[in-house]
Length: 356
Image 1 (cartoon, helix red, strand yellow):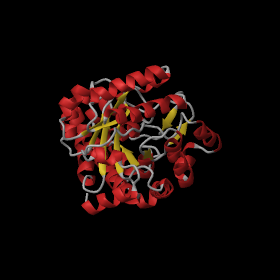
Image 2: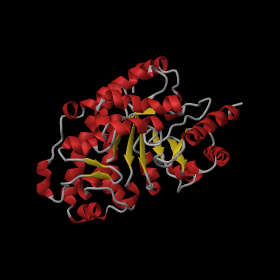
Image 3: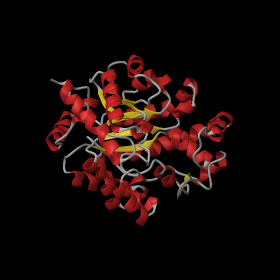
Image 4: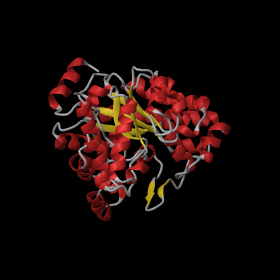
């Protein structure tokens, strides 16, 4: 990333804690945001949900921008993350994606073999995903430099899971069997997803995303060798293509066994879940990368004094430097807003105390 671009970001942003932390600079306090912060636990979001379908909310830039900014104003996070979905990519590639209320995503005509690859293509992202870039530009304008804006995409392995399984799953056995029994077809599909994702994320950065996060939600379903083969080698391509243009974070839930090779991709940050200690994560990842995490989202349903106590403990364990406070997965829909706010406020207060 050019020095001029960094300079420009610094001038325009009133709060650039997240960016400085990702670059490895010493900061006055730990930045904080929460995965899935834009949406389901906020009462104002629920009102919009009653009026508009899921993809209407994603595809209408004004609605996406409004939802993206809600947690900045209501919870006080140090970054906004675009309200969108990882499944806009298979949609753009030509697969039908439905969001079924109470059940989650459904892809009624999934990929089963090599012949099925003829039904999809690497799209022109500017044509198929224009609404995402419009939403980013509008959000950037409305944020007016208050905080950085995060764009994102699903990692190729996670996207393949949905494209092959056709719906959510705890184990994605069908997706794994597809990869193990039809490896050539799997790698062709993964490369198509990767090429689409690189173009998509480059365009997000151009549209105003300050940081890009890759979500490998199902990376933890693979052992270390398969993770390298079916996931990490494709994430590595994406990070390589982006890292000079925009700050990058990889979050591969459950794949802590591969923190070392993930750190070696050159990503600026690595997300971790609550199943690994900060000390062990740091030991595996080394000290040249920022760690993000790792509070268990279910614990946000604890009483507020307990949340405060446990967040302070988490912050002490990370030791303050090169750490972004976050959850170890997305915020749950039934978390009270004041509990989310307690999480954010505790991080902000601790760091001010910690810097004296």
